[in-house]
Length: 158
Image 1 (cartoon, rainbow, N blue to C red):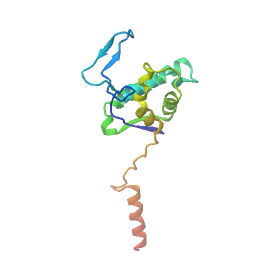
Image 2: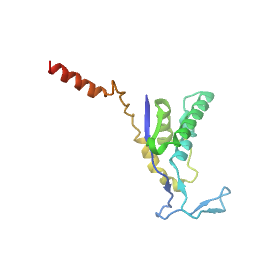
Image 3: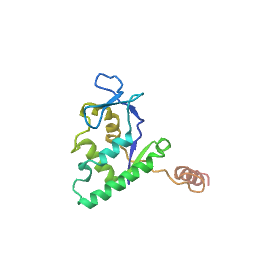
Image 4: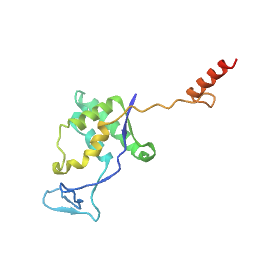
């Protein structure tokens, strides 16, 4: 079984007053890095960061946790190449449950806590993940529903 996380398009980051964010702190915390267009935050980046949180591997042996983390990161990256047509990410139940835990109860702190509200759409996508509806395979060119209707019609007309 798997879970489906709906796709959220890239978001232009804002500061607390709603203005677009053109500058971000540099790695030394003193300088700033200016961008010509507002900085964007991506859903994939948020998900990968959440997979990196210690809460994602809670309860697993160290090596099992790193293997699961690597597999999940690889799967997210692979799916991101076709995200628009797919409409979201699919994860197996265990990885999805662990991602939910890491997003809702992270053990780490965001790099820029004052800007964390920019991640809310991504948090809501994880919170609202669903079980995907498996498509029925056609039988003789008909879906199971149509096949059943056809059999009922044939039985009623004899």
